Image 1 (cartoon, protein in one colour):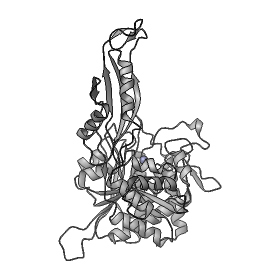
Image 2 (tube, protein in one colour):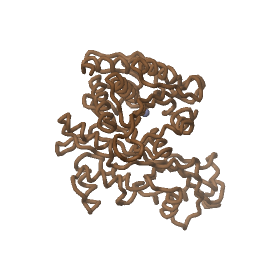
Image 3 (cartoon, helix red, strand yellow):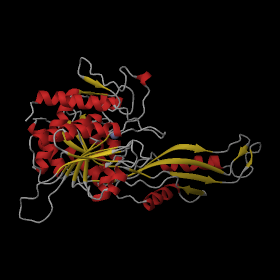
Image 4 (tube, helix red, strand yellow):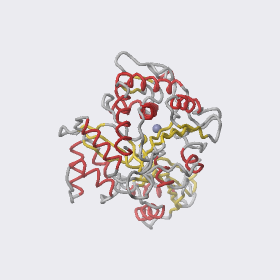
Length: 449
Ligand SMILES: [Zn+2]
């Protein structure tokens, strides 16, 4: 067993080395270069006897797949033992060094223990912690019952090149972990009653934007009653979308959040939402937004000449969906809200990205709870759905993986995490690197030991 002190130094070193590889991902040729991180991690893990492969669709954008093979079930059943994957991505979003206190690819650690750099929270911190946990498990002779995977992929932040997780899982049908842990949780939410919730992500919302086009008849603007101007027609239609929040419903993810917050099943949803709101400002609407589809009009098109009243005026509406919602459900909702007294057309500029989620309870959530308890950490687990997209979606779709987002933070306050996320001055406290490493060691032993 490595001393915690040296494990701390090791994970700081790995995180800094990863940040120093510029793996900026944007839709421009020559960007990405995740092979820099993949080769670094391969060399590091091979040093401790871990099986490692680079799997690349484009040479400079390699994914790394490492494994400590399972020794098989010791039970009497023939079912293959369950497997676990530590998951992450090695690309980062673009940044402008002029906005940073410390250069974003120098990985400065300041006197107060802050590690600064692009990727410090999204998510070279977590990749480093998972890699060091993997190395430590290998060199201490950990023999998992089922396979323990370490998967760090390219091209999560953009995805357009399709060289990352989606492609990897299609290319490699042997990679179908039973459980996985990836980015998307671990932040802490203090409540007005003094409790502190520790978030873990059970899924991601989906999207299906719609274009609502009011249809009238063109006319010259000098006589406003000529034709039938589509702009005021659209202006009549849009308020019918209301505040964009769904009617309260017993959607399972929202109910699980309310149960964790209130400590009971409150049948009166309005009362439950009001109580959640009183525990943390904004939480009521956040939970209500998980009770169905949300609708927010964001883009507008009318006439392209001031003196022409257009026959068509369009608003694009950002729509976010919860697991189990189909395109037909979304269309039905939009049409029921818009009514049928004004002529309109619906357009669908993008295919639906379906929401997905894993069970609130399971081996990984149980291991997170057990870790907090063993740490004498009073935090209470709060299941959440991300509004953004993560690679956990692909894992669920490919093999039904019970995929979660979690890496514990204790020394890095939530406002620091949020301020740096995809922004300038991204930073993490180095103590959280060790905390996360220790969590992943514990997770592997609990799930596969
Ligand atoms: Zn990320």
